[in-house]
Length: 361
Image 1: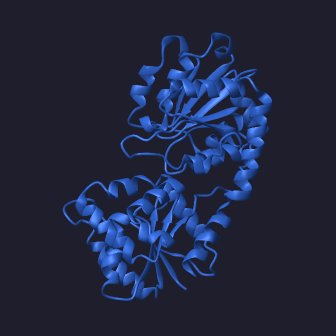
Image 2: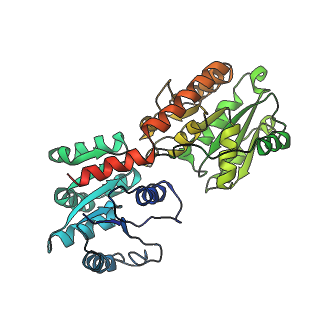
Image 3: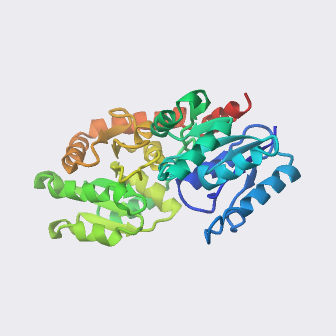
């Protein structure tokens, strides 16, 4: 069976969805290349004008014919699911629809979109959800399609990259981290990631513990200025913004970190679909503090690989920080268990093999 991935987001495009689809092609197990039709050069949707995606209908039809495609994996329910659904009305076409989080929320924002989504799902062969939260929402919307719904979480590499001990020593020396507990956040600097609540939590931690903590924030985003203004003066030397960091630096910081924090929350339907970075932290034997919202509970097992907190309550985040900061053995235990869980339950080979099995049966 020859399969096509039909997507708007694909490497070198950044983000969790592009990462998922890049690994889908890297680990495709069916003995032949997974064909990709993406929008990296604007071939499918240039985002200008009404029905700007319509060209993708012809592109998909030509690709199916020229590559002798038997099955299409649709990476975005709107607008690409519309294209696959329409094409299936005029020629034999089996397709699966992928759903991650915000894409599903956005697809239900108007009654017109809901009608369209209903048609797309009814004609689909499979509905593949990246987390159990979205799967539950889909089953509520389309209960008769429950047998089509499957959950395939994102994955992670089988091991973290090698970190040169000298690089780690240089990092510790540069930031004077000896005998300090390092807290680390990584992601786009937008409110739903929970950096603002973490800053508020740190501001209320007892001074006796705060003296031993340093919090590093990596990433850039639309709310960076807002977040910087939230930092009280007495925390200026305790909260450090790193800006954009490289892939190598990411893994170096995850190795250095004693606690990884991303207490993500749902803001008007915009929520964390999963959070591969939680698994990456665990892969580096680092325990995590995560927001109990959206698809995050799939990525973080509470009291096993990290601690789930109420992301709307800075006191809940504070208590989790205090718990882990005061208990080195617990940090090590959660980090060790998290690493084993990431390797055994979330390796990309296993995840993609499950997906491939779904669409071939």
